[in-house]
Structure formats: structure tokens, C-alpha cells
Length: 283
Image (cartoon, rainbow, N blue to C red; front, side, top):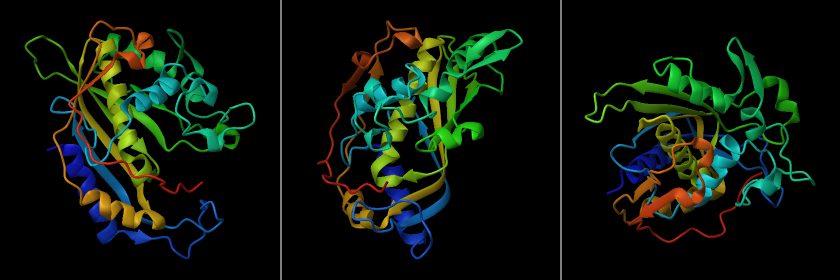
């Protein structure tokens, strides 16, 4: 059975059983009818996924892996902050009349900084350092730019990736690339597995680009929450049958991070339960 399912079910049950409520507090999100969107939350959730064992896609319901990949390419490869460069419509509610979400996400990745050895944006610097100094402890991206928060239509939720290389003495000589994903806030029903799969794919693409193997994805969530109108949906979801994890690979011929497209994603034997329709989203 999928380990991602096991992790997700345990996390949701823990939030429901032991979480604290924000009901009655002043909260920013609202439902479409204008009512305050309260949550049950757990602070400081940490989930670990080993990509050498399996790809962490839920089988309780389907996660759209090509859409996940398209959004992660939008941020880290295309370095865009405009929804017209993105196929899924998940950012439409936060875009202005021109399609911009402000100085967020891809805008921050593409910002160029002057280093002693040249000018680099955040992603180019990661790729360079992984090739030149793989055991550096300073290889990361950070989207939470305090100076630009007032120009963002939504502050970044998943905001920081720290890359860390381990030498597991593989027979083929390749090193293992791991990642810590830091997230300040997460709507567990809507976004948890979407984010997990996104950053698993990012880790796989970066690893393949620098001649390494994708290892562990460690997901740190400061505020993992289930909205009040999602609790019954979550209870139904985590009671479903679970299946074996799908096999997810990338086209092995692509070794340039900037050459990947969603056509290079290969998904095999993905069995899953029915999708949950009409999930209310708080904005």
C-alpha cells in the first residue's frame, strides 16, 4: 500500500483528534458566502518521503501529476508570476486583470543577485552549487522576501527549499540529493498531496539535471489545518481503501533542468479512488 496514504491518514486523524480550533478568533480567509473560514490545526507537522522507495502520490483519490509538474515548472523553470503562463487555473482567484499575482513565486525565483563569482537567480545558483560544491550546506531557495510581501497578492505558502547531498556509496557512483520543504501554512484537504507531489517532482528533476539520485523529501508544515467545512470530507476520504503507489519516472534523456516539459513525466499503474467534487475553497 502507498506510504503516502499512510502518512496522510495519520496526519489528518491527528489533526482531527488533537488539533486546536480557530473558531471565534479573527481570521483572514472567508467562504464564498462571506462567513469566516475557521480551521482545526496542528503546529509543526513533519512528514518524510523517500523517493528511492516510491513516489508519494495519494491513492485515496487522484492527484493530477502533470498539473502539479506544470505549476512547479511555472515557478522554478519559467520563473513566472502570471497565470497566462500556467495551464491549471489554481491561481486565478489571486490574479489581477493582467494575470499577475504580484511579486510572488516565480518572480522571486527569477530575481538576480550579484555574487563574487557572477550574477545568478535563485534556481541557477542552486544548479551551479550542486554541480560545483555539492556538500555545501548553503544550497537553498527562499520565496519569502519581506521587502516584496506588500506587492504579493498572496504570501507564499510553500516558501523555502533546502537541498542537501548525501553520499550513500551507490554502485553507479551517484550521490543522493535530498530536500527540506518549508511551508508556513497548508490547507490539508486541498493542497497537501498536491504540494508533496510537486516538490517530489522538482527534487527528481533537479537531481537528474546534476547527475544525482532523488532521495528524501522532508516536508515541514508550520500550520497544517483542516477547514471547518472540510472535516466531514476528510473523514470520508481517509476511510477509503488504499492501493499500491504508482510508478513515476522522468524521461532519462533530459539532463537540462530547463528542458523538462510535462511530456517527460511517465506515470504507470496509478490506481486511485474517486475524486471529491465541489470542495469549497476559502480565499
